[in-house]
Image 1 (cartoon, rainbow over the protein chains, first blue to last red):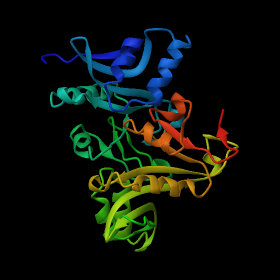
Image 2: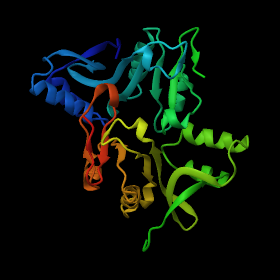
Image 3: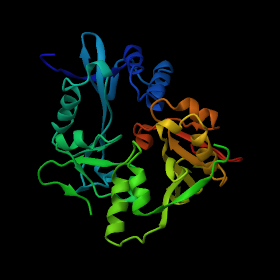
Length: 157
Length: 157
C-alpha cells in the first residue's frame, strides 16, 4: 500500500454492510441503519467514522467524535476534543500502518484526542504519543483513558 | 465445577497479581496497586470486583459498580443501578456457566444492570434477559448499551 488515503465515511447501505466485517459492530451501526430506512437521515450523509479503502473494500475504520468543551472532564484548559473509538483494522490488513495512519489523522486537528485503550493496547497508544490519565473511579468506570495532548494542554485536576 | 461460589474480591497484591491473567487489565488495576503501595487504601479492602475461584486460582471476574440515582441516564423511574464491566472468564474455564453465574449474581440485587455489550456478545446478553437500549449518540458514544430491567422499570425517554 503506497499511499494511504483516509476518507470520511458516508452513511449508506454499502458502508453499513462493510461495517459488518468489523468486530465492534453494535447499537451505533444498527441505529444508523434504522435511521436510514426511516429517512431520518439522508443517504450519503456524513458519519462520525473515517476509514481506509483497499480498492473498493473498507479495511480499517475509526469513529472520531468531536466533544464540546462544556462536556470536557479530561483537559486543562477545558476545550473541545476528539473522542476516538472503534479503531479497527481487518485482520488480513494489519501490520501495514493503517491504524497508525488513522490515529495520526485524529491528531492532525491539533485538538486533544481521548481514547479507551483496550485489551492491553497500551504499547500502541504510547508509541502514538498518547499518555495514560490518572484513573478516577467515578469518571472512568473501568475505562483505560489514554489521551494525546497538543502543546500547552495538560490533564485536568 | 459442582458449586459456583461468587466472592467479593479484596484489594491485595495477590488479587492484583491474579488480575494480570485477564485481557482487560489497565488503569483501574494499576491505580489500585499504586493506592495500595501508597497506603491510600488498606490491604484487603473491598474492591468493585467479584470473582470465582477454582481452587486458589481466580478464573472469572466482573466489576460491578453501584451508580447513584442522580447519575442515572438510562432508567425510568431514575434509580440506583449497577454498571457491570470487565466480565471475563479465563479461556480454559469458559463454557462452564461461570459468566452466567456472575451476571445472575449482578441481577440478584433487583436493581437495573447496565453493560456495554462488546465484540458481538449480544446473543449472550439477550440470553441473560438483557435488552438493547435505543442508541443515543451523545449519551452512548459508541457503546452498545444492554440493560436488565427489574419489574416495573423501563427505558428512560
